Image 1 (cartoon, rainbow over the protein chains, first blue to last red):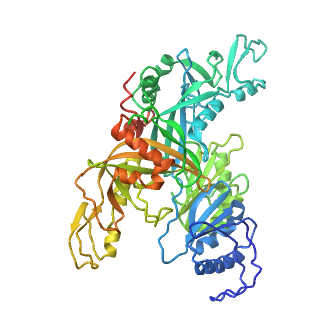
Image 2 (cartoon, rainbow over the protein chains, first blue to last red):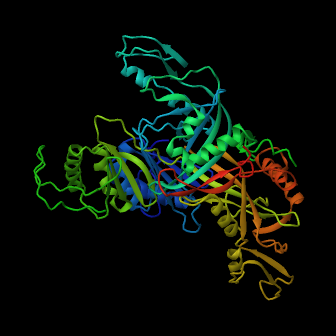
Image 3 (cartoon, rainbow over the protein chains, first blue to last red):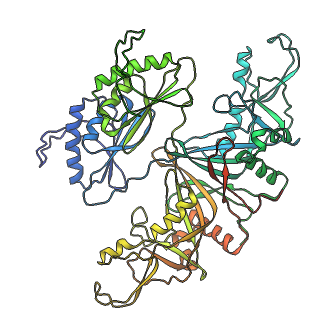
Length: 319
Length: 319
């Protein structure tokens, strides 16, 4: 889709003779989507927009969308003057919308309201927990060891995000570069080298842990996490795909296996609160009969679209 | 926070003498938030912005946020020229951000990626399901009866949204208005009146059903639901707070109690797919031992902030 000058000379009833028209794609809800791509003078745009809206109204269109790349910020003011408001924005574009139908109520869908994150519980067969130290954020520099966490991207399945984040958070190659290493080895990499930074003892780097998703143990919803937006944090149980990773002893490392009791003895984890809640539920899973939600691939009832439905799979056949 | 002309005449090293400065609030991450409120000429704004950024850099600021109400769309282009990009937008404002620190990596948080919705299973003691017909959307006019669904607002708890949506979706007062009624009665309202629109038989309006949240039975994550955004749909089990609501017989009504078997016999519900999945899980809950997630109020480990953690409460003490 792109802006084009309509080749057919048109005389519209309201007097917009020979006006340029914006080209848009029709959607299935009597809407029009205009995807602006080329630079344009704001006055030319305004004239074309007015003529186009007039035509779309005659055609029975209801919602008009305009996607403006950030390079076309000069056109925003004109659109706003014509009655458009903002729908959403991403770093490189702004989406505007205008309900031009005068006889119907707007059915413009809501904007995204939530950010989604995951926390991953990864325990090995020695009852050690995979923990990391934050490189930024409020825990940076506190010495606190925590479970790997991260953000689920738009379009990414929660359980896949958990696998990806564990791998990324346990990738300490940044640290290695500082030490003039260029390592790219999975899981566990032993170095015994006295010439590196004056270090003399053996140590282990814990790199890019691969895991398998087990289930979602629970989730937390918080509000006003960022401006007016809310957060959903999914606590995921993961199974490490290797159990022989050894504890590394180099202090600068950002990830390691830690005995579970050592982890829970940290003050922030021990005191009542969300971290305590996480360890309680972890124990209920490891030592008890706790059942969380597992993803089941389900087809839409209307289309062929597949998506994951997370449910208590063990209880789901209990009726 | 508002834009103000800094009263102290300042000579900055880079030559911005006596330049107007934007006033901003510092945040806890070495950031500045400029909340523009008053109209301003875009050239004056550009000069003030340049001088302010120069000053903020000297002060060690890293991220600069500018919130522009839609009425100040004339200032967007200047901000973009100075290196700002979009962070997010709501109908009436645009948030721009610029990482001005040259020695650190951006830690600007992600934008919201998901819309959140609920679906409510409400069954009475006669094994009837509360069903509605969609007033808009793809099911409009199809005659299909479905469970009440709706959107969770930013800042709204999922379980509270479920209660609200059931109440709203079962509010058929719109219909009543068409019939020259102004009713605002809860639950069940019997009318036997031959003078209204020529109707002669008794009928019942089912209005604003109050429910109690039981638990979340599962949730579905779908992608590209709208542009690039994803959706999270939480299936909620609800308990009606009254069981004596009677089936209404007026065809125009948008909500009613329907025998569960009649509901599941609808073709869209019966065939394999998400709707079928919903009824299976509903049966596992009603006739079996299915356990979903319940909200537990939990305090943050860092602040006094309270939020809800949804977990399998029954299994959580199993360790």
